[in-house]
Amino acid sequence: MSVAQQVLKDSKGGEQARAIRDTSDDAATGLRLLGRSAERLELGEVLDLYKTVGRRNIEYFAWIHDVYSWITLPSVSFDCRKDLGDDKTKLTVFDILVDDLADNYETRSYPLLQRLANIPWQSRDEITETDPYLDVGRRIWKDSISSLSNYPRFNEFERIFYFDLRQVLSSMMYSYLGNTAGIENPIETNFYSSYGCLVEVAMDMDLMCSPAFNMRELGPMRTVACLAQKIAHVGNMLTTYPSEVVERDVSSPIISLALRKGIIRIDELGDKAAVPKVSKLEWVFKNKAYSYIKKVAEYEKEIRSINIRGFSNYLLELIERFEGSRSLR
Image (cartoon, rainbow, N blue to C red; front, side):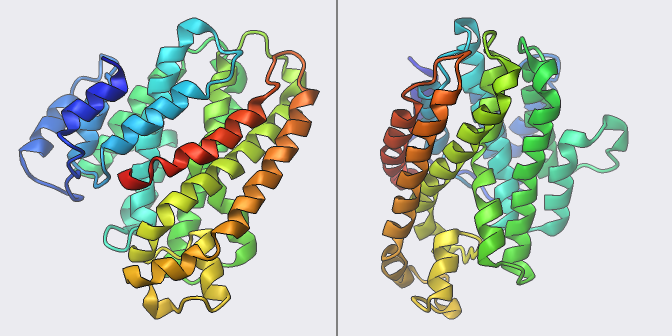
């Protein structure tokens, strides 16, 4: 049985995770898992931790694990592939913990958001308080970075990885301020919104496990990664905006555009009846994604140390795969 199948089996039909600050028996289970710092957690254990404080459908993580396993760069050493799939999924869990503090109308929390976003740069000595949500975030982060630090080329990519991670967390902060402080605008939304998909972070991890990659080609490789991130963001956005309309998340580019064009009013957010109106703009973002895919096809030819020819075809299929995750959101 694959990891994804096991996750689905354990999820008992995709049972929704409990709300933030749940104090049930699951929370006690999660705290026991937190104490197992000496061992690398299995993916299922990370999801058990998430369920003690999170709210997302657990089946989604099985889907994202399958995607990460499928779209790994062909240059990755075979013996790294399983850990890569697991670690990318674990970082996605951490990413979603942050995201729910920024975007969701019911769970937004600036104090928790700030503290969770600081975890990757925080030493144990700096931890002055405990909170179930933060404890889970710390444990998942610590488990993930402990694994990454053993990747063959981690030292070469460490600074780049942390730079890209900071962009991810900054995008979450922008989302929070866009939803609460009125700073949302089309230029910044276009700049920040794609980082939450973690694609550049995931490709950093692939390159850490790619012995043949020539660092002199890092520029064009990051161009491909940036474009791939924008493509993944469109695919993700087109499956999540119906729920984000209900969550009143104006940081979603399609919702932001619908508001600016007068297709919906701000007071319609929170009402499912607004979703069909917003859907009229899907074609705008699909066209953008297809234009990015064409650019990837051009830039992938500039990379010669590893063979990524045809990567653009994977991205085309990725857009279609996101449609299959719509029911899991």
